[in-house]
Amino acid sequence: MHTWHPSFVLIQHQLSVPTLLQPPPELVIFATGLVVVRDYTEELGFTPLGIRLNQNDLCKILNTIDRYGFFEYDRSTYIEPLEPISGQSIEVNAWKSNRVSGGDLFCWTQFNDPLLCCHGQAEDSCEPPVVMPALKNTYAFLLSYHPEGLEPLQ
Image 1 (tube, rainbow, N blue to C red):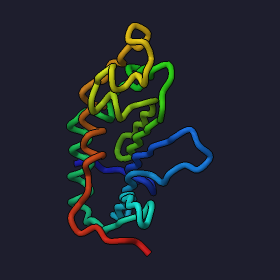
Image 2 (cartoon, rainbow, N blue to C red; image 1 turned 45 degrees about the vertical axis):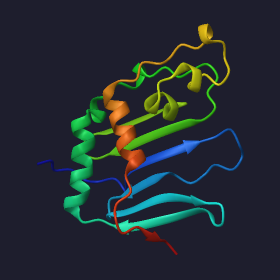
Image 3 (tube, rainbow, N blue to C red; image 1 turned 30 degrees about the vertical axis):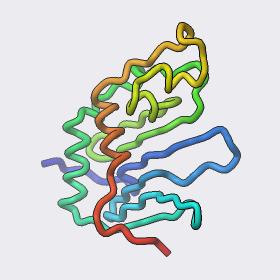
Image 4 (tube, one colour; image 1 turned 135 degrees about the vertical axis):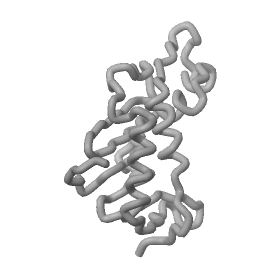
């Protein structure tokens, strides 16, 4: 059992692209239990979906991230590619905090395929980054996190 004073934002997963208009975060989980997930449809564009979780559910999420080793993850182990197409960041604030951001994090954590992730660079000039399990598992968990009962936020 951990005793701590929560930050307003417990978890945030953000995508950034090289444009003036940045999309809203993929996922934000607030200390109040409010979860906001970004959804996208051609008809509506980006739509925030939300649900309020209880403290037990929040603890399960944070404990999962802790078990993956994200709080101890050394950010310097992910050296991003020379010419990233996009950037992603994960920030978790609980009894410990950690923030990791990097170019093409999605591609390297999900596929780890130079042909796919190097975006046309010569294969010998594209060095795949080392993606430790703590980062890969946390990223996959947050990317797929869509609790049942999400509803459009007003």
